[in-house]
Length: 565
Image (cartoon, rainbow, N blue to C red):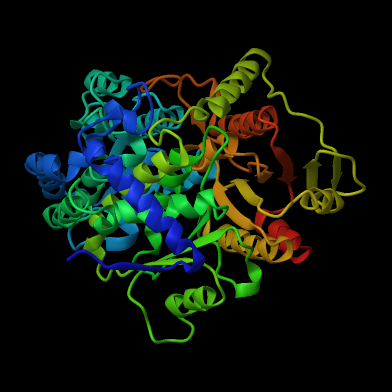
């Protein structure tokens, strides 16, 4: 059964009705299902070859036996852990499935490595039983620098522990045909290689091999998951009125309100569905943040009282409403009563998540049409990568990264600010004064991910929102570069970016080649180069950026900064 959706939209309802009528007259949904690239642009490149996701719920059924064979073989051989090495579209759906479904009895405990911080890599390695661990090397392009760095590190680690003869059987690949990863998997003799439909973009790949192979390893019933997705696909097909199409209706609401200035799409959900937010975040940010436009997905921001928000929000709520006065549902209803527009999606049980993913993909594709962008390309993603490669090249030539001089230092902080200040704290206050109505602030945490750090960053977010009255985002680097990074450089320039970095007490070598002891780079250098490269790409795009480097304990320093807001 498809979860019902409704909305409290106030004065926007008439506009939405008009857009739905236009969508029907122009046959937008029908043309999308027909593969008509002119829905989004005059040229077919990165449109016509990006619509394979529409068929994923049916096509993937033909691959379930192949996936099941892998799962049963590793279970029978005593594997108990799986580590997914991937970024963005390769890692977010598996993370959602792991958090929503947990691990069924007798299946593999799945962890995701999508941080190049050396502490994150070392902690992952230290928590493994190498002889019982399967590594999933996952990248659509087949050449993602983070993914290959992880692969080389863990290939060498297993070779030391298990011997080179046994190591290849601990690796599987998920990639597109004819990619560099396919070649690598053949060269090293991986246990299995799953070749995905190349007509599916990374952020639209949740219901393809990229999402389903890891899901199967934790014991998710793939047939049941695809049943929900197939039901939603039928409801979203190009027949009937757009207002009765779950995905098209949601897309019209999102785009209509964004075009009216409510471009901060704030995601709320009950605990069963809250994990889906990180996947929706990437889908929206990379799909809509370009050409000077953008819908900002606000994921994970602590809920506030009505007075905490401006008039640039649209809220969504997913879950089953509760009678508790302190439930998520009750709190967002108070926002609706105060005049904030709210979309409600009444999902009730975890296996509806497959359908919800399909609903959101259709919605974002339709929204792209209505705000006037191509939702399938990512023209600004390369800018930070190119700058990071430049930083790495300079390091390999000189032995040092091209670090700028700090503006001011003190109390375990170094500030790299747009203007002079007497202290890092004063520099931060001056930077925050640059915020304007309708802006957002992004905390770019190039830090080791941890529960304590996340909690402190969330507190900082809430304080910034309440003080400045603007939306907030937070992401660990370089993970967010594969999620919201496109929007940061491609939208209308209404973001403030607070980059947070820290010293690395420990580091780990990145082998130049899997199986070789030679290493000319470390994970510590790589993440520093990525932070420097991202900062430079933002400056080149005329964004407002400030960096704070911490040398006196991350959580302690973040807490001090939060209390000073």
